[in-house]
Image: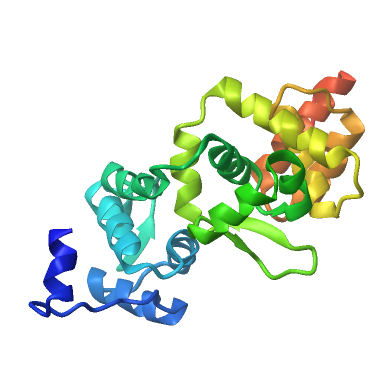
Length: 243
């Protein structure tokens, strides 16, 4: 309140800093580090911050201070986990203060499975809950013909998942599986349902595992191998080479 009063009374100037474009963020990171930066890290930083300068600064500082972002052969390269530091997580968690239980359920569902079709969320938590989250700036629609819902910022998912216990996680995943099982699904959602069923402790056939593994081969090779090994185990085999 005291800080707000300063600019309202004209004693200081308020400057709203809008999110940077991808190109501007890339330039800023290069200037901050004083040298060229690996393109994969630049993409990762953009996808995690969406141009938010405060988030970018905290993530970048934590990576350098933690020794996971290092200069190799003159290029800054990520060599370890890229996670938000505690001070940034606390800042983001502040946006969740006052969230009602039904709203928290919707947010947890999105953290586990975003993007989610709006009709799936409506079935589980109801329209008023989604309207309230949209008004608070915690939920956004992606503008697709399918009307998918997402969290308003990628780092919100980190904070929500940190606080999600294993029992609640399994229950919410089962709720997701139940809500989507009675409707036709696009391929991308169907693949995610297989992963939800695995994480929820539900049965998944070897055929479903292999089909999903094949689609992830070029997108997420470690996940594809994990799914293929599960399929081989289910069939009594000993190699994921079938994919």
